[in-house]
Length: 281
Length: 319
Image (tube, rainbow over the protein chains, first blue to last red):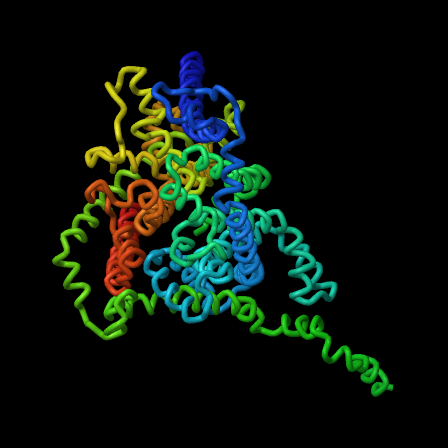
């Protein structure tokens, strides 16, 4: 009996490794291929027989991307939009999330469900009216306008995810502070938010990555280099340049570098937050 | 004597600064019974302004004529004109069918691969943590990068996938995966599944941690095999998580045309035209906001019906 148990366990472990290694290769392989491509000269990319490793490493694609395509402006625009989005979520979302986590009040459940249902609204259904409203308010083609539009789907996400972290922060310290005469707002800023700061950082990173990556709203709500973000600019290169693969790969690598670094830094807390939010939701 | 004690209990006199100190005022405000509503106010106002108002406006648009490139007659109420046009629009029906194919196959593949990966990771093998991080990477990649990366690898002239498939003898010659109406949808679904299966892995892994180990020990003693345990313990215990994950993914798949916009723009022919893409192109390329609005309203209603039916069904199964 014990013999067969260990035997079948071993088989399952080997199978698990096989599956995981194949999936990991499949997940990372395309990225590695893009990285290789970004260091290739055009002759190595467009060839009769496939060149797997660059015959000579070159930074040509990166230099061309930086100098010819206005990429630095796009990256700066994206940075501004992302920062504004995170700031709006941070200022309005943190306190909302705290209220949902710590207070029981009439209307709490329907309100929380409301924040969840908002995610069901089709992007296209909101993009069109947002386009008209932004144009009338003079916010069309501005980083602020785009950031506000991003808030429409990222703020509810922010509130739900952060609520999970607030829920996990022990309530005893807060009670102790209250007994010592701290006001509610004092306890919130001096006790609860510092305790949940890892979660707060992870939630901000999650929102920042989503804003940084976003394509559809940016395509519709920006029209000039004044506010256009990198995903839109990168996609435009497909039509603008002949055989843009090298530059596309270089642009892809540069743009996902911050995402990968941030993801690596807060990956454990963030994963806990995404799953906690979804499990309870 | 008693009067003196009452005097001492009174708060010390306030200075002028104290009376207008914003921190003190906020502190006092936070002790009132409406504090939580005040905390919720900014975000609720924002969501009302940028989600609820546009949505209502979008519904209204679907009953009006609104073409930005033809200003004459804009804003006029046209009743159900757009909806009537939709019923007679073959592209609408094709998009509806394509949406069903796109969503169904993507969900099934993402769920199965996500589940298998989560089960394998849940065995807590040495090195599993690193493998988990690697497997989660695609989920955080931007659509624009993921899409173009695969477009490069599947390219009909320079695609490395073609080269590999030819080398191992599965293909005779390079194939234009996205240019052939027979393979475009399947290839797009593959890229989508690659991009989003980690979402299921993430959620299912979290769910697996919540299943008591005793259940499996008992099943072992009863002689239940691995597949019986999966069917009788794991999947039933994960029902809520799976339901939540499926609903969230279906919403994402129905609502966002991003990946198809980057990979195929609905072509070749209209073989990868889905509803969200059709609505977006009506707005973005043709500036026909009224018709695009009507298409998105239909999408929204279909999603609501799906979510409602799915939740009902997964609850019914509990009994």
